[in-house]
Length: 345
Image (cartoon, rainbow, N blue to C red; front, side, top):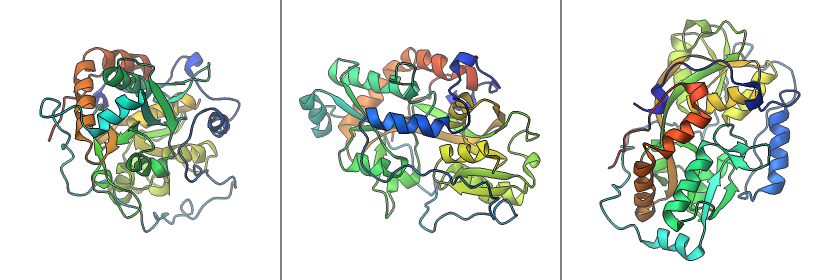
């Protein structure tokens, strides 16, 4: 059973685990501070929600449309294409490059609570960071032989393709869009899933919304362009449940709009939703997870030797390190779970 099929989400966490700082804009302030201290892959600055409190056309009853070049998260392809760690070489060019350098360069997030966020010491910590250290140990025999680079969401695949990072460990969903690439984004390859999730609704604590159901009628729901949530809201969410959709580049932008009361709910994958709920007082996860998505470690297209090392590490860590990390970071929000079963193409 994957992580996405665990027990009911918890509605609250110990106060000491909360990340909110005097108002909803703490997330933006913390992200700005983090940029000073962590190498960041070059690219466009992260998108920020507008500060105006005026209601949008979406909230007035006109659905907001995605940019014309926004690709779907779906499509027809086999996402179970990662190589079996027993099937071939683990010492090709990609692995040799890391070993010759003596450190693993990992692309991570810097403001994704529970996954990759700054702790009280100013260090990046979370479920994804634990995994990066496991990979460094497997490749170099040293958990600390890592350089963490924060990567903007709109440059994740470019950073991998151009060799700015060896691996991308950023709760990245394994999608046909990412495997095939788009005119704006080069293709990447993925490891076997290291986390399974589904779409879930995040709402204010006293909201009457109970999940992805008819309680969304007439409500404005924010989701990321090109995501599984975008597809759900474009189809069933509007036709069956009568929800209005507002699209944004990422879930953090949606959280900002929720903080400003400019949307009624956020629809994103449960792993991200848990992180948002843990950092924002007065919010909760509503209803069960919808559908199924998987997170994978992204690498440069064709780096099968590196994927075999990663997949072997995931297998080895499955019953020990994975469980320890999950119980530490995510169990309080998503309930008990076990690591995903290996999937190879």
